[in-house]
Length: 253
Image (cartoon, rainbow, N blue to C red; front, side, top):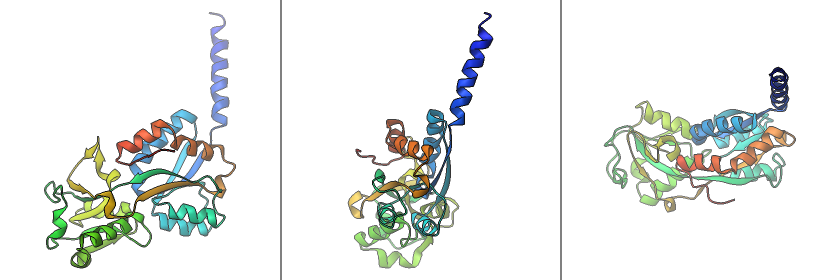
């Protein structure tokens, strides 16, 4: 018993020493990843002691910010094009990029009867607004436009379109009732393996280009232990299981 305080002091010192090495990683995060990242970040912190400091937005907007010197260390993109460009332009670490998820697009309505399981509502005359992310800067927005084109209904729905800067804003248009429908990320509406509220139609993957989502280590994170650990953690089974739970295809690394 006389050695117990000494043992406790030693254990406390070891724990404190470990926390001294913990760091933060500044991550630019595509808006569709908001909910999955919240869980992944919490699990990552418990596993490593490192903290994720996220900023949510559109991948295209982050690209412009990074070219202007924004101090992010990791980019979790909504596509594979921007991370490739960042590598090519010398703003990211060569060879660090990989696909962490493939996203799925869903036509969603807050109305439980608003969207039928086959998406035939798109073949009817528009009733209300249809929200999409800006297709010029948001990959999910580009996929939405490709879907409307594939179905031959773009001209009919064009006057009803409302654009958000990111898929997060497109989702908010529908969630707030300012749009009757929206093309959003499946991860934004999936809960326990199904659409949690409202109604939706999961767009067949061949209706649009694959939404391959890449992560890349930015130059600012080149020497960051936290940033390097975060990239490795994204390859782990716990992280991949979380992504699968939100409707992503995680493929193989």
